[in-house]
Length: 160
Image (cartoon, rainbow, N blue to C red):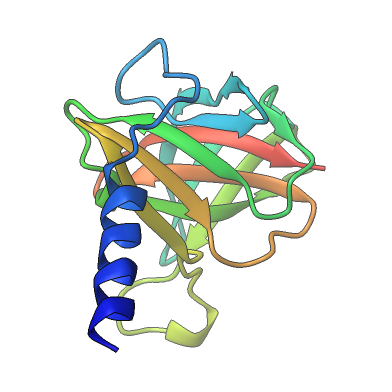
């Protein structure tokens, strides 16, 4: 029994000590979609904040993102310098008739059940300042955004 525990402990130590050997992002603080051994840069933009009645709407120009993935549970490689990876939230954006994408947040304490919720993601440290972000639920085809908490900066992509 003791021998089995020792072998298991050694195997787990070896697994955690392996270095990440995949592609590295060319720019820090930008999430990159991982497609096999290739990185696809997400679309960087600034969401415009608008007030509509009592709601706060964040609008991203353009009907769709040029960063596309066929993966329903996308994986991102992210080198963190200024943006901590745990502050990135994943949201679905809705396309509009006027050729933009948006997300609508009701005022605090109103219609909480209608408020968009961030989609589940896991964050795994790969090395010094390098992280793997993974959607932990299946994303239907559509437009999505990773955005740091309390920021209008967005990193958009499309699942097709």
